[in-house]
Length: 384
Image (spheres, rainbow, N blue to C red):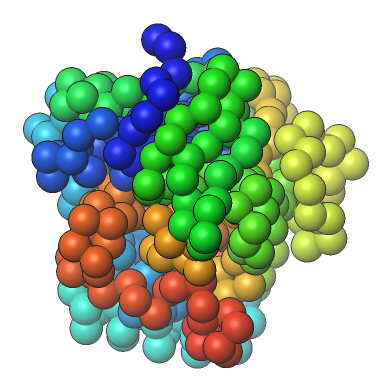
């Protein structure tokens, strides 16, 4: 498909945010939408390299409210788009090993319950009984929500791409944006290696690359790309079918079932910002030493695969939605490692912001770009 000369709306970035935004704009009846992806296939960026977790457990009301709309959208996804996404409700279990975290998580649990999320408190003994294969002597307790779980990221992206194209969205791969035209404070189009597109509205949904992309429009967007990596094991017969998505919060270490084996990852606190998506073998050793201390049977596990991806980290670990100082240039970025699960609602919110002037499904007005200069940040604690 050739790059068109004009469009009403150009969406940059073919991951879950861009695909969802393009689809929801088309669902509202908007015509002449072009979705641009720089890679050969859709969903090869941050979305395709994420672990696929979806959860209600957050420490701020706005993130919980986003989940309360977005996760049910994933439950209805096949009915709406025709695409199966393998939603597995294994539950998220945050295990806590220091008293300060216990206080924060218990307060967050009460807030989640008040908003309608069914998170429960488990004592250390209850967690040890539930996970007998793990070393958990130091665990004080934790929070568990049985509705949290896992979804296949590629299926979500392609579900939105295919549903969007059926409604007229032109979705183009191998179309990296190399320039953004701005005249008199208004966006007028984009340039790609395959040609230019004149458009009065451009949506930046490039995730970890949004800081660099926005510079093309003369904007400073405080999103930092940070590498995160994980691996999967060969089959482990000892892992029970009901093994949860387990997060050792103090160590930013996590595990969940992946096929007949496990997926495990751990965040490197000393990772330097950048776009490197290769596996760091030295950190992999540190990670596996920590993982084996928690789950000794990993000592005999074979390596099935390992890979790395990028988090798009904002200064307060919350997303950035909406308008910018450049008229017609919109942002949906900065989700700081939990964007995939909020992709469905985010696309809907962006369609409301662009077409109606404000988001109404969830009020995200406090998550604008201006909050960083105006000192209105709100910190998300439940980030690993």
